[in-house]
Length: 340
Ligand code: ATP
Ligand code: FE2
Image 1 (cartoon, rainbow, N blue to C red):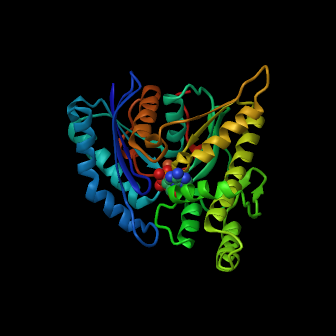
Image 2: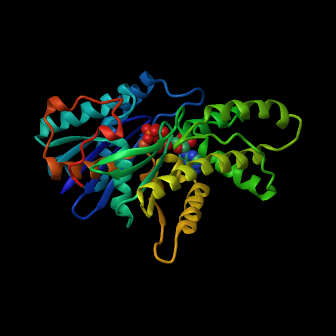
Image 3: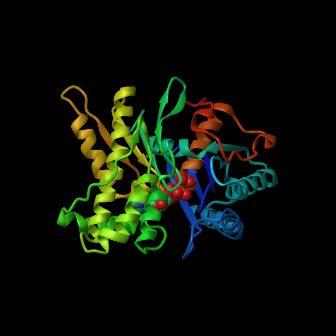
């Protein structure tokens, strides 16, 4: 069954053709809004998506070598996300569905990050550490729903890293550049003590950001440490916070698998730390394992939307057009899960 998935919650407009029965991704095309300066202005992101949507959809079909008439289901990200961005994907999905008479479903973006982990890795019932730009959540399936066991109280970890990168005069997105500098810094092992902020099962980054800003303008200027040292220390600190909450969620739910998702999951050091934590949790009778998908499926992508759409469609059938309004503030635990 060929499914077309359309992702447009934030800066990425992504479209993918997936053969759901064979669990094969035929194409996964994306076009991301970027700026040299400043952040994401919702109106600009929406205009970016309008500008590229037709081209990205066409490319996804061409790369997969299929015609729209062969598509049996259209799935789109219904929320959460930026209203301006979500509307473009939803409108494209509705139009294609109506013109070509193809069933339509809208899905939750955060749950899609978890389900693609279950599709592409051996994980069966994992905890998801969803670490992206706007989102930082630890999610698991418990008692019939996906529930959030811990999350950020302020900014998402990716946005935090991007802001930190901006303080250092690096461009957007900052994650890959910080990762590179941190690798250099690691060699010096000059670890700088930083605020470690966990409240219950939740994490917070804004205090740390203020602290770093002071350190950059004072201590770093005075040559007490290098920017490589700082990148290394920041990464170790914030990733340790995420690992601590993930581990506690695993212990609380009695789960033995961890799946990483979101753009920050591309970070090799975070992947390594997840591995270490799972190894340390393993006992003779119970092994724990962490899984990560390819980078193209960690970042926002149409393939995960197509796959979750398929699962939802199989369980519930198509959605009525009048039920396809976007849900910018949809919570993970608002979603009725009929497919598990
Ligand atoms: P969402 O809508 O799910 O919040 P998003 O729009 O933020 O997603 P993603 O592609 O999931 O988009 O994540 C982008 C974030 O990932 C950026 O903040 C970027 O800096 C960060 N990132 C990308 N690569 C790395 C890396 N190697 N290390 C750390 N962070 C990274
Ligand atoms: Fe995402």
